Each structure stands twice: as structure tokens, then as C-alpha cells.
Length: 459
Ligand code: NAD
Ligand code: UGA
Image (cartoon, rainbow, N blue to C red; front, side, top):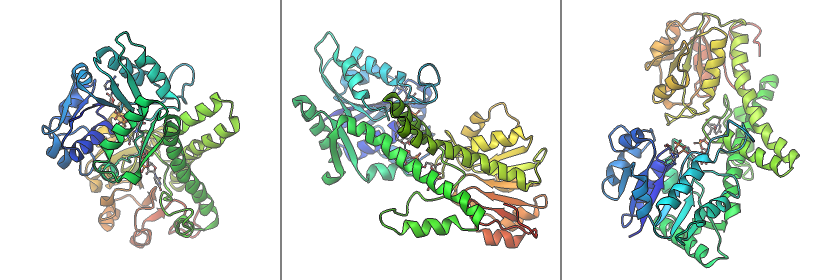
């Protein structure tokens, strides 16, 4: 039996350890966190995060071979393998502010591991970190008076929120970066391979050098974010030319070299990682003097900001250049469907800009209202669980999250209760635009011709 410890009980740490515990019933898993309230919730029926399939999974493994605890010291002392999934946010102070990753939580964790370890251990980076972080960690950990040896491996996590359990159970690949040139490094890599081999087909477990693994994670997110910005850039051109971004995406996606996924034009990408990781990459490039490479990647984030801004600009234009005192219902606040997470959600930006324009903003979302209330704390916003009530008397609806439940609403009923002219700004191209137009709505999609009842549709 191997004792596995997960440090950090967040969106990555909780689901990752739960799936491992489920797949490796012969091993013992503990998840620890500094936030006692979070651990309490992991030990209750009210889990701290919403993720499809997570509740059932936790029911199955908690108390069997998965335990949540605040006793970090004990957890470290007992562990053979430690997965570190603490947060690595963008630095907000000092050198690299606004770009570099803030590694203070990671380093504190490393020092805590060193202080409480009584035997050699494998320490695994699950958090997304700048390339060469493993070296710094190894230096901190192995400089100890007890002669304890630590091997630091990189095993970046590629799960996406909303599909985390499926992604963990059937990953496209598991990447293990290490130091196979050293005997203990090779042994550590083999130990980790055996752990994942419990459920991941061997050909999907990929080994590489530790720096490649660290850089692969930043690169994967940069490529994914770049695809969204690329299709969003084309969406603006579509709006000028009466092309339809959905048709363009379908046509290019059928080319197997391009592929059909991640070509959904939107109000912009959100989430805790895309912007953070691309900016981290930009910082690393500038650090190494690669200014052109840095500028290239930074444009992915600049374009995303532009996409969110022009979404609000279009609301203003269509609502006759003023939204002051007008009720605008935001349908969805999560950064994507099937999660309650609102970190870096485009909805935050849209809501704040509409408030600056003195709009009367009402937010509805099936899972994210708690987080939305924190994001907009102190601002004059109304939160409403019922989308029908949210839209009552509204001048416009802005669809900001692609929740399935918004497709099935009775839009005739909604239309009847709205102020006229009634507008829908579909920031996800989620709804049936023709049907809405027939009801009487003015429909403003992303990257498609508007469906407006006025003689001269304006862009
Ligand atoms: P999170 O904020 O949800 O969770 C991090 C947890 O670590 C928090 O609960 C925090 O209290 C805890 N923590 C911080 N310092 C600690 C310490 N010293 N000891 C114990 N616990 C500590 O963050 P997350 O979304 O789970 O992301 C974690 C890392 O994984 C980040 O580097 C992120 O880039 C990466 N990642 C995230 C996702 C995702 O979908 N959210 C996917 C892949 C990778
Ligand atoms: C992303 C990556 O997909 C994961 O592989 C990675 O592990 C994770 O970041 C991370 O490192 O945190 P996540 O942010 O959870 O996962 O969700 P995505 O599905 O990637 O969506 C990110 C954002 O892009 C969302 O706001 C989504 O709505 C938007 N998006 C995505 C689009 O606007 N269009 C698309 O076609 C796809």
C-alpha cells in the first residue's frame, strides 16, 4: 500500500485525488488544505465545488481510502508520494506583477514538506508552474540536515472544469516529467507510472524530461486559448462581412489538420488559467529576451479583452447608446457551463462595464450565484435564481454562459414580459436565433448577421 498525500483541496486537488482513490483501492489517499472551512465542506454533503459526477464519486471513496484533513504535518510525515496542487496565481506585486506566476504558496508548501518529512519522498508538481520550478523545489527540499532525499517530478494536470471527472478517468495523456538520468529519478518516474497504470492505458502515459513537462502545460493552455482568440478574431470580421462564424468554424474544423474542437466563438474565454498561464509564458519569454515571441502570445490575451469589450460596446450601440436605468438580465455568470466557478469569467467584466454605464444589472445562473455575489460584492446588482423573473421588465438579455437550461426556456413568455423593443445578445451563440426573431426579439449573435426588425440593421 502506498500513502499518497494531496496538498491543496481545490478544483484540481479534490477531484484528482478522488479519482485516484477510486481507481487505486489498494492505496491510501489524504487531501489536506490550509483552509479549514474547505476541508469541512469536503467532509460534508455540501462539497466546496460543483463538478458533474463528483458527489457520487466522493460518496464512494470518502472514508474508504480517501480522507480530507487539515493536519498537514501528519499527512506529510506519513506520505510516500505528495501531489502539490496549490494555487499559482498571477503575481500582483513587485517584479513581474501582472504577468509572472506567484510561487509563494508552492514554496511555502515545499518548506513545510521539508520541515515535517522523516523519510524520502516523491514530490509531484500538479499545479501549473513556470518552466524550471522543479529545480528550485529540489534545491529547497534537498538542502536538509537529515539527509532525506526528495525527487521532484512534474505531472501537469490537463483536466477542464465541467468535465473534470471524465477527463481524469479517461485522460488523453498523463505526462510525467522527471530526471531519468539519475537512478532515484528513474525510480520515482517508474513509481508514478505504476500508480497511473492502475487505470490509464500504458501508451497514454508519456514520460519526458522535467522541463519539457513543465513547458508542455503552459504550451497546451496557450494553444487552446489561442484557438479561442483566433475564432473570436474571425467572428468580428464575420460581423462586418455577413459571413457566419459557425459556418466558417464548421468548414475549417472538417480539415483533420485543424480539427473541430475549441472553435466556438464567444464573448471571450475565462477561467482561472488561460489568461494566467499565457501571461506567465509571456513573462518567461521576456525574461529570456524573446520579445517577439512574448508579443505573439500576449496578443491572445489582448484579443480576448477586446472581444469582451466589444460585446459590451454592441449592447450599448443597439440599446440606442444608453443603458442608464435599463434592466439588463445576464443569463449565466460561470466562465463556462457545468461549473460554479466564476474566476476570470467574462461575465464579471461585462457586469462591471454595464454598471459603469448605470444599467440595472440582474444576474441569474444555476450554479454560480454564490461566487457571482462575491465577485460583485458591494455593487448594486440583483441576483435571481429564476431566469423568468430575471428577465421580467428587462430591455435586454445577455447570454454569457452556455448552460443547456437556457435553451429550453419559454422565450415567448419571456418576450411578453420584457420591455420593448426586446433584445437578446447571445454571447455564446447558444439559442435558436430564428425562433427568437420570429417571436419578436432583436437578436444580436457573435460573428453572425444580426436578426433585427429594423429596416437597416446596424452592426
Ligand atoms: P484552487 O485555488 O481551487 O485550490 C488551491 C488550494 O490550495 C486552495 O484550497 C488553497 O487553500 C490551497 N493551498 C494554498 N497554499 C496551501 C498550503 N501551503 N498548504 C495547503 N493548502 C494550500 O486552485 P485550482 O483551480 O485547484 O488550481 C491549482 C493549480 O492547478 C494551479 O496551479 C492551476 O493553474 C492548476 N490547474 C488548474 C486547473 C483547473 O481547472 N482549475 C486545471 C489544471 C491545472
Ligand atoms: C482549460 C484547459 O482546457 C484544460 O486542459 C486545463 O487543464 C485548464 O484550462 C487549466 O489549466 O486550468 P478550463 O479553463 O477549465 O480548462 O475550461 P475550457 O473548456 O478550456 O474553457 C476555457 C474558456 O474558454 C471558457 O471560458 C470557455 O467558455 C472558453 N471557450 C472554450 C470558448 O469560448 N470557445 C471554445 O471553443 C472553447
